[in-house]
Image 1: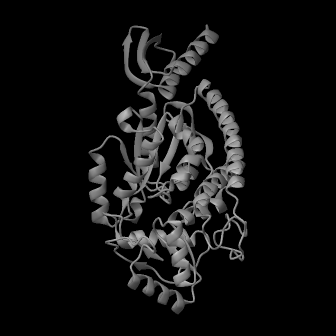
Image 2: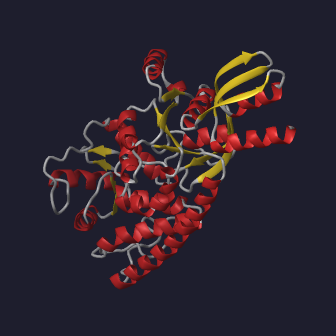
Image 3: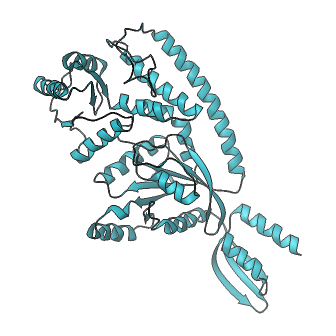
Length: 415
C-alpha cells in the first residue's frame, strides 16, 4: 500500500494508518505499507522504475494480490502498474467507492454510489480488465474473477447514468418536500458533520439513545439518520447524523451525495465533530470545511457552526489541559468525550444558546403568583431578565415564533 507522500503538512504515519483503515474497512488484510516521496510523477506509472520494482518485490514476497495506491492514478498508470506488478491495482478513489458500495443501506444511497462509480469507471474503459460486473458487496473492484474481458459500452454507461440521475432527482424532490414540512414545524434542525471516524455516530447515539452503527471504522455511517432530541429551553430539536468526510474525497461522491448533504445546508445549526486526539486534527478540520464550502456552507456566509472537540479522554494530562485552555478562549468550541459522556451537557447548552440567538426578545407581564407561566418561560425560552412590580412580574425572554404562539395559546386557555 504505497502512500505518495504528497499530502503536505500531514503526518505520514497517520496518513498511512488512514489508508490501511480504509482497506481494512472492507475486509482487506494489509500485508505491508510503503511510503514514497515522488518528486517527478511518471506519466506511465506515476512511480519511478526503482519504486515500481520495490513495490513488485513486496507484492511477491507477501503473496499479495492487490495494490492500493493512496492517491489518484490515471487509467494508463493503473494498467501499466498491473502489468508490471502482476496484481490488481486500485487508487484511493476506487477504494472509497468500494467502501461506499458496501455500506450504503438505503435505496437513495445505493443510487448515489452507483452513479459515482459509473462516472469514475467511464474513464477507465481502457483497462485490460473491468469492474463493471458486480462480484461482491461493493461494486466489484476487488472480488470475483474480475479478469474476464467484458465488452465496454460507453453508451450503455451514459444511459444508465442518465436513468440514475432522473431517479435521484425524484428522490431529491421528495426530500425537499419532507424538508419543507419540517421547516413548517417549530423544531430546529441540528446536523452533525465531521471527518470520518471522528465520533459523530457515538455522539448521536448518546444524545438520542439510538443505536446507529458506531464503530472504530472509517465510514461506519453513510446514510443520514434523524432523531428528536430535547435541548435546554427548547421543546424539541431534530438531530441529523451525516456521512463522514475525508481528505481527497472523490469529486464523483461529492456530486452524488449533494442531495444528502443538502440536509446540512438546510440545518439551523451545524455541529462539527472533531477527533481532537488525532495528529492530523487541524488538517481534518480543513478538509471538512472545504467540502462544506463546496456545498454552500461557510462561516463567512453566516452559517452557524459549533465545534465539538471529541475524544478528549484519549489525550494525556498535559495535552488535555492545553486543549481545554485553548477551547475556553473560544465561544464556538465545546470539549467532550462522546464515549464517556464528559462535556455532552455543555454541548447541549451551547447548541440551545446558538439556536435561541435568532429568536426575538419579548417582554411578558404575568401575575407574580403565576409560577406555572414563569416556569414555562424558563423551560421554553431564554429568560434575560425578571422584574417584580407589585403583583405583576415582567419577564424579558427570547422566544421563537412557535413558542410565543404556544405561550399565547396557553394563557388564552387559562383565562
